[in-house]
Length: 169
Image (cartoon, rainbow, N blue to C red; front, side, top):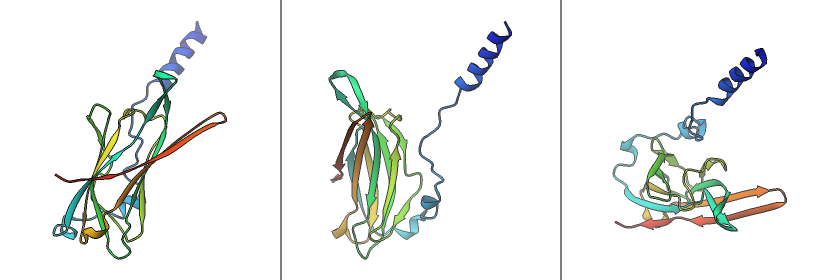
């Protein structure tokens, strides 16, 4: 009887955990990049759509292969700073899951910042995507948004990329 009570206690203790975001909004490298609206308010703005895949299907549509995702936000200008103002993450159905850019940040010339979505974080599905809003003084060099999806299982590995597309509204 005592063993059963201990087993129940341990199960309750370790089995009940609050779901937390896998993205650490307080990462030092992002916190030091926080900017005020006055720094970019007179700049031109743009939006970029970036397709990502939390999983892809294999064998049949009932089985899926989970993927880790690295979102790479690259400032390809050699002279101008880019400001990332918003980064909303959507699932396959088009529902907004989370804002991964909780405050505007700057990206220096030729700098890259990243968002990582772990393999086991699968709410996005096969049609997941991001929409980023950004500002730049010089629109000749819009930022580059890429996603790298990867997974390894046993001796099998899978990786591929996708690239953002500018949204004109």
